Length: 419
Image (cartoon, rainbow, N blue to C red; front, side):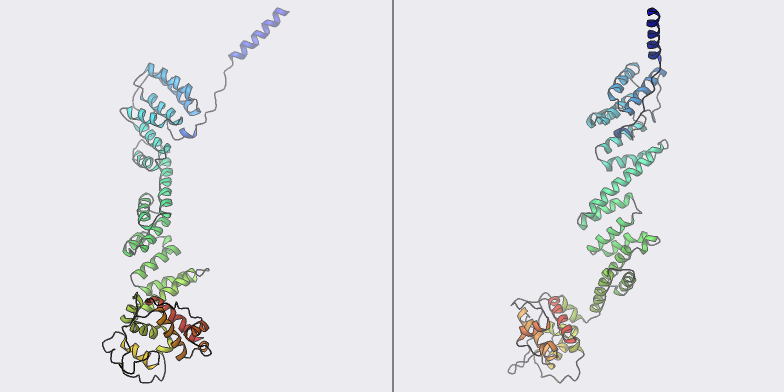
């Protein structure tokens, strides 16, 4: 009986040892997921035995068993030293193990090259974060009639990554550098509306309005043309070209759809630019002056303060002998007639070329408020008190005043008189 029991046990052990183990589940490692079969595009031949051994080695690589695969590949090369897929499979192992230098060396030694070699070269570049190089290589690979379908999807993936890198760099760059990045990005994805709009905006910042318009032209017949960012860029191009009326039309349309008031504020600014563009040359010159004279200030007062420009029953002014050839002569005469400027009783001069300082502007602004009947100026004392009472801010310094500084003060004066 004991003898029979041992026979049964031994038979069971033998039977168990003869069962075929299920094949392991093959799960490609992340490093290998884009490495295609090394035989792709290779047109050589080998024996069936070598082919079977290589297939086993390749499945080990896909499963991440690099040591086992390397041993099998050595056996393959002993049997067929010219079998190039075995060399390329070693590249897959080197990439998977992060030995990028070895991988590149092995790729360079494979002659002649074939499709899979080119794909591995591209993937090696991607593994080292040389995304633009990998993209450029795949761009050539997908042109091959033998390119596998996976190459097209990988090309699209790299295309997106290169675009994102360039677009991200442009967002954080100065306009000059951003323009270069964005143009490269648009070469990769010409239909990227956000990149095209950002490029136009940077060109507008540099006052390259014609270039900006050229960049926006491809959007003319697309749905993106009506996007607020595109219309805003076109409006700013109109402003840059001095086409204020066209810009106003665009901004009025944008303002109707804007709940935050962003476009309304810019609309008002453009309207002011439009009004300024239609001013006489002496006004424009005074506005742009870094240092204004009394003649410039008279011009600014006339055009900025409504109660001076539209004053009724203006008396005849005394004659000044030093304004006959002065630009803004009529505006100086109006300031004299209203009692804002005084003529020296001895020399009969009003000194139109004298520089205006902050202290001068304080006295003149207070005088305008008083003589034009601002309610806030009635109970105040000297110039400083008048300005304080009327909420007009001027720096009373003995330094020259620019046209834009004087203009801003006179706008405050105009509002104080109108209240």
